[in-house]
Amino acid sequence: MLTAAVYMALSGLFIELLVGLHERAASVAAQAPGVRPAAAASAAISVRPAVLRFAPMAATLIFVLTSLLGDARCTTHGAVNTSAKYHVLMREESVTGWVTVADEHERKLRLLRSGHSIIGGHWNSTRESIFGVFYYADAVRLVRGAPQANERALQIGLGIGVSARSLHEQGVRVDVVELDPAVYRAAVQFFALPTGLNAVHLRDARAFVDEAPAATYDYVVHDVFTGGSVPPALFSREAVAQLRRILRPRGVLAMNYVGVPSDTRVLAHVAATLRTAFKHVRLFGEFATTDDAGAPLGRAEQMDSVTNMMFFASARPIVFRKAPADSRSIRGTMLASMLHNEIALDGLPTAGVQPLTDAWNPLAQWQVATAAEHWRTMRRLFPDEYWLAY
Image (tube, rainbow, N blue to C red):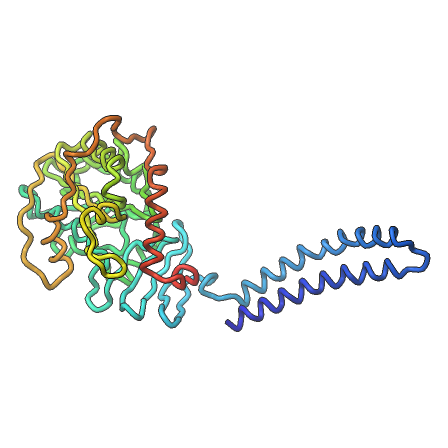
């Protein structure tokens, strides 16, 4: 607050200086002996370009003062700051924007943010994910016929590493491909991502998948949602064909998609794209049971809300074994409830539906409304202070 007040005071002084210089010049011109009123006005106007010459210097000085005296949370690499509600553990400018890790005191949770998107978080007491849908991906190991030994998985898009860590702890050899090195560092340092994963590739996921050897993985967990949308290049027929190629014959793909379940146009096109490479596709949603005020939500309201949905795709029938009973953990609760949250794909429209391709992929345009609603949802879940100050 003090630095902001100093900055505002100095800015005001500079403006007053410029205005005062202009008025003084006009006054001197008007009082000059033998100068008529019209000539005085002309002289005052001619002084303005001279005054304006000082504007760039003043603006530069104000900018420097802002950097020196402004809030370090907005300018400092690797800042550690505390406020009444949040404690910032890391802040780093990287390839996807500002990557920030912050603890929220009131709800006792830790958040990983990239730009204007929260890409993961955990409860500090248990280190379980605040987004339960990420545990849906563990169901790849519950598909009947899936291997139970010497398994290997690929995680596309890391976040805080919920799926990568969970599969690793179950004995699966996990490879990760993540675009942003700062996200990986944050996951290791602040979210207990194991350093003993099979491999970590910090590069573009589409290029990695295109170059990966065939029949390498038993499972692929695909979660690249950020900023209210997904990258179309990872949701095209060509990308899906490569995912099928790098999976083994019994392999299973789990693909997270964030959208509105009642938006059947988008779901129909994504499902049609998956079916170009996988014979069997199923979809499950994570549905809120109450609204922001705590009132119960009906199914129709749930279907009209932005939510996480998980596609499962395989060349073999997708039949899940019953998840081990574990009602004490979020993971166990989510896996136990997943089958009750299936979104039927049989009733999706077929007229005008075609696979998304690298050449034709309108997902970016179709997701504009979803991105706006996602942003409003995030603003309801987390206060303005979090978005504006960090």
